[in-house]
Length: 158
Ligand code: HEM
Image 1 (cartoon, rainbow, N blue to C red):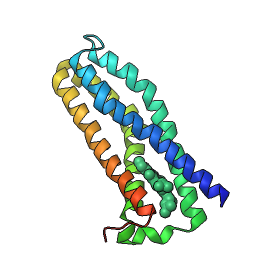
Image 2 (cartoon, protein in one colour):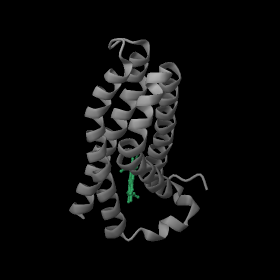
Image 3 (tube, protein in one colour):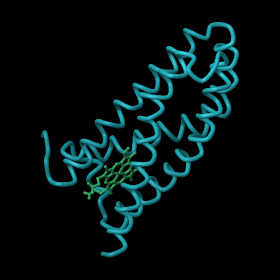
């Protein structure tokens, strides 16, 4: 069972790096960028910071997915995906899929170009929506983490 312990430890470490970074961007960096604390070119400032973090987040997401699937396979937990008491298992997978879509497809191929046009034309509105989007992802991630930690210790709302 040492392999499952290692997988769980790596799973949690990657979650901490990824969601900790999201928390930092949402609660500290984006408000500072919106205030113009990194200079008047808010788009340039944000892209420089976000670019560095995006690669950390992408790597962490891959580790979370691989270690999570490994635990499901190794412990044969597939039945959990049909049980309401294990809603947090579905929440983890849904959140993971959402972030894979955002960071591997939407951001590089769609959002980056559109956001640049939008932020050039109407920077206040564009950054306000970008900030709201980050808050939404952070709230979803926080509920998932609360559910997963409590649920894996046997606590259930159902
Ligand atoms: C493909 C996606 C994922 C899969 C297959 C997966 C699978 C798992 C499994 C099997 C466990 C162990 C459950 C148990 O011990 O009963 C677990 C624990 C956990 N997962 Fe995930 N997970 C995934 C994504 C995520 C995401 C996106 C997050 C949070 C952002 C997350 C956070 C956690 C946390 C906090 C724990 C509890 C660790 C502990 O308290 O020991 N997982 N996950």
